[in-house]
Image: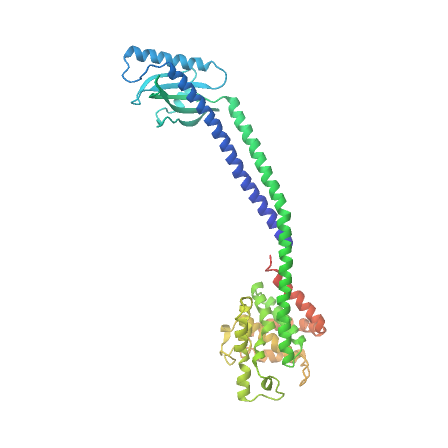
Length: 429
């Protein structure tokens, strides 16, 4: 169980750490790209501002000569920038206050870029802001920006749109910076994960140890309570141990789930807990009970159910506590349940309880031989007991009886504790 937990913990921490690292690394990379974009946009806005220094006071209502001069000026501006090292504008266009184009320029080798970038799909920003969008043409990145253009008096007179060629070295810088940041984030997250693993494993080990202590205390309480009832009823601890072992082995033989077997174990320990409420005159009467006394004795089932219902941990024991005196033909008590209406755990326990009573020595009788005990169970199949369960039990009873009959009370107790702790330990992890 501990090994399975450690595998799950390592797997979940690894996957979780990688997922967080990927998210944080991606976020860092995105922030780096955004910072580079902002720097390039600032460069474009700066160049637009430089261009505006040589523009007329207004771009509206220009005559033909003025438009030609403005167009020539813009082409010279772009051509001059194209010969500088690094990034530069390959396409530029000026718009007047009515958002009408008044001049444009394209460098000689930008035809492919002009076809790829649809200049009509842009946004004219308000309040002096700058709009931009990234484009990948072939293996080259470009940044399309629209920035306001101001006149000599500081008033906005139009917009400058440009397609900026991002330098290759800038792209490389983005990739290197992003990769370094991502690697650092991944390393930090994985290092944190590696530090968390022993801490969580240690906490889990401590929790399991405390849980096992609590489990042993709970099981010990059940065992002690069952033993106290058995001794008060002039029975022996060994009967409680054997009947629980018989019941669990039968449950295993019919393929009962571990959850149901845990409930069976609790019910087996506490099946007669309600006898605490039965007066000694009735419980310890050496002879046969009369009708009224038997009526009182039968109330131990209801008393037992009242006890186990008070504790959430014991509610699943109700099947055995409330149904171990029912019979499959409906003649049992307290509810007169029949067939499959009787809880399966109660039907299993009834066979184990009667079989051990038949094969055990009592002050008033010698133990029955195995063959006679099985014959009695078989004769009662269909009336008292579930026939299919009797058939399964008859197949495992000889070897199981030989084994348990050879053990004294301490050995039976030790075997039962190993068995029960094994089942309850499954629910800890």
